[in-house]
Length: 231
Image (cartoon, rainbow, N blue to C red; front, side):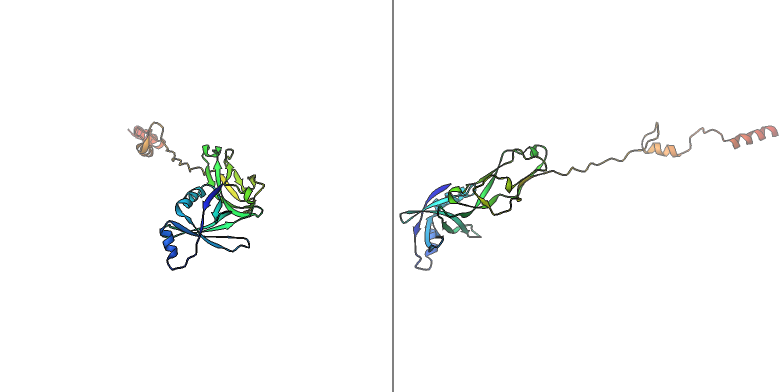
């Protein structure tokens, strides 16, 4: 995406000029390019804030309107106050149509992975990638289709079809993978040993105790016969 942005040259002559500019809603910046002298400029906060919102979703190339000319630029860095978050400074790089540039491009996942429906865990490794290409071939973002991503499968950077750009990361770099969750351990209840016709602990105690009316042993019968003869 190419966006027009108005810029104005300035020269700080007094201490406190920069702070005064920020209070007036102006953001100090610098523009530089290959074999070019850097220039101090400022842009309006309200205008640049719109670009910052877009940058969260896609890469932006800027037509910087400066002194009656349009300079094709990319944003190289944005500085914020670490405490308040106030936008402090911007670096613009002037680029040429026949000169390759480096830029960070956001990665968007599109579609619904079938692995999700099977209980898989979607693990995205890359949310943006640095590419090198000609300005006219710079993509605003990279779409990665995950509609066929099943359990245990992975999409690598080499699977992305963008022949006009060079990736700084190796082709083997993982963009997103579908993890297989570990099965939850199943608790097995210990088996209960039961005596036939009797349940629980009482049955176990009864099984251990001698039964009432137990048959007489052979020795008991012999003693009884001796007693009868004696009589």
